[in-house]
Length: 276
Image (cartoon, rainbow, N blue to C red; front, side, top):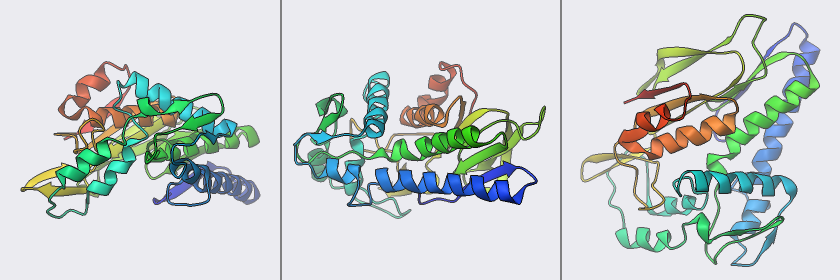
């Protein structure tokens, strides 16, 4: 998943730990194989190469896309799994960059989940459109692994895939897992922590992937309505939720709100932390 992944297990049994870790590893690999946009042999590749033809979906993919559809509607189009194609117009390597405005405008014609047609078991995109489940896949994998661990054992566990975290239960009765919050400019320096007895926590930020346009620093999170990076977003946003997918959606939407991120999250009734 292009990030460090770990599973912490509260058990004295090496056998149990190995069995549960193997279960987690296999599920994470399965999800990455199935939903990564970097592969040419999975359902995402079939959808992106469909050329406007309907693609038959398995139940799991259909469920994930229905969730994406709900996110699109609830966010008034800000959370859009078709917007990943805009990455072709940008390079976020920390250097000076001159965007091609004509390319951005042409790519915007291929962005808009409202142009997709999702039925019970088929998805049809306009020719040239693509989906990118990067904003959902890792969070989905965390929730799935937690569910499998919970069904397989009563061992307390924390699943951490690149900072998207969920716990099966507290480490010990009355003792919560402690999740440290890192300074986005200096990852080795903590700026606080959050205790987590159940549920999930996710973080999104723009510190590591950015560019400079006419000397102005721009982060990698793109507004699907304009094709340009969101203006004045927080350096990082952390949200606590019941599930990783829920928390992940809120962190993404908060980043897309730019300078209004804290106001947006305050209206959601969730625990959060914004670092500017």
